[in-house]
Image 1 (tube, rainbow, N blue to C red):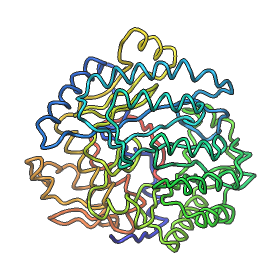
Image 2 (image 1 turned 90 degrees about the horizontal axis):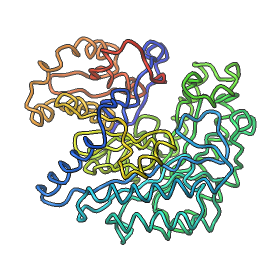
Image 3 (image 1 turned 180 degrees about the vertical axis):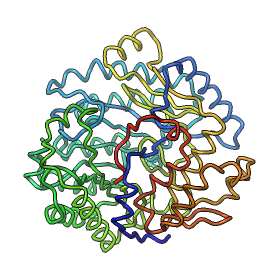
Image 4 (image 1 turned 90 degrees about the vertical axis):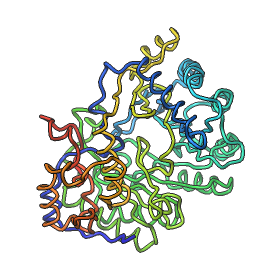
Length: 466
């Protein structure tokens, strides 16, 4: 693939508006509370029926939300419980164990778990014994791989783990880790309440390699207080030297009206939009020179990484956990606020801990909202997925898959596509769309053209695209 980017500042300023990150379509904004646990059960039954009709059982993906954090990072927009009391995890995990049993009972035993992920919060907030028990309960109820061929990953806070923790996680079956770094600069760390030494981060990376983890991914954030090109460049040089398999360089979205911790960030200390763009431009240049491939949507990977290979082979996918190599899995989500994707539906668990406890203790699924995808949703989801994953869309494949005429079906979208073609974001032909170097940073804008619900919205509830 052509991995080049062109930073056209005038174009970026013109297109830099709020928009979804498309970890799903329809996005979570469209979820509604008329979708209940009973609706979810119906889709689980449908999923099993589809699996039985397939040539081989359809695999599963499991997501567990561990919401606890020892300290709050001011930039964070995640659903979390900030506490130093480690005993608070036990009653929560007891309910998660019950939900595991409830969820597993709805899926056929022959459906192997190809993907498993612990996210948060800080999953390693829980004790070693609690980690062992959570994985034991999961193995008791779901069919996990026992040969290390599954894609089992966990998000780590380097401040929360040591060598013994890494060894334990590998023993439990995890083979991929993701580390939050954000920035090594002490001034930036203090401003966002994320004090994390380089040594702590590098120790975890080294321990992961010593224990033969298959993939190490690091997360950085640009746009935080006091960041500029020079400062962030120092951090990036150290990250490149550490040589992770994957790297995410996320744009900080300052939305204090939505996320309370962000109100503790002084807006006057934030870099300007122009400085942020310069940081991103510098980051791409350095990562490209270091041999990383631009996957899209802030993600980079080494050419031999699974994400890069999947993109080259046309099998890359995008879901609630970002880019994925397993498009064929139903995603079963457990814990508060977690989002699942089963058959043609999305569902989300309740967000409040006491409500989650009450429902689980009553033997009820904690689903509180979701959405059933229409035929139009499925079509538009496929279009958006192809563009955001591969920067290309073949009209004939879409027409064959959904039995439509592309130009007729998307007649309303043609004007916006023509404007993007004129601006050099895309190459638009009778056979398809190819995102051009000018358009790669603005892939969210291109996908937004096909978003039916976005056209109907009276207000935007998303971050800026750059």
